Length: 175
Image 1 (cartoon, rainbow, N blue to C red):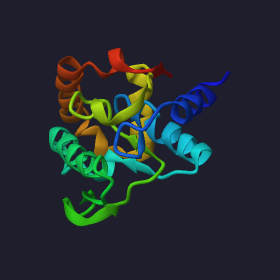
Image 2: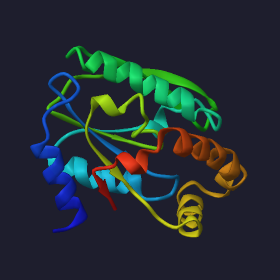
Image 3: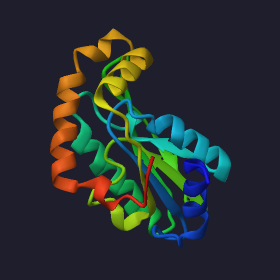
C-alpha cells in the first residue's frame, strides 16, 4: 500500500478529535514535502488543506503560528467557525484573517502541525522526512534565494520545536 493510501486510510478510519471534524496533521521540517503530500491527501479526501505557512507571522513566527492554530482548533472543537490569521510574506505584514468552517475532515499542514498543544485535536499525524541537503535544495527551488538567508533562522526554531514537542515520535505514519 502506498504512503498516500495509508494516510487516506488513517484519515477515514479515525474518529473525529476536534468536535465533528477530523484533523489530519502533516508535519516535518522545511522543504520535506509536506505541502505536496498534504495537497494530494486533501484531494483524495475531498477536503481543504490549511497551510501553517500562511499563518506564521514572519521568519521568527513558528511558535506564534502554533498558537494561532491552537486557537483555531479550539473553536472547531466546539463545532463553530474560527478566524485564522494570515501573513503576507511579500509585504512582510499581517494579511486579512480567513474563516475556517467545521468540516468532515481538514488537513493541517506545516512545521508545528504535530505540536504537543495541537495533538489532542488531531485524528492522525503524518511526519514527512527528507535529508537536510535535499530539503534545502527543494526549499530554495520553491522559494528562491530569499529563503537562503533565513534558512538557519527557521531551522533554529524547528530544532527547538522538535526537541520540546517530539512530533515524529507521535506520528501515526512516517513518509
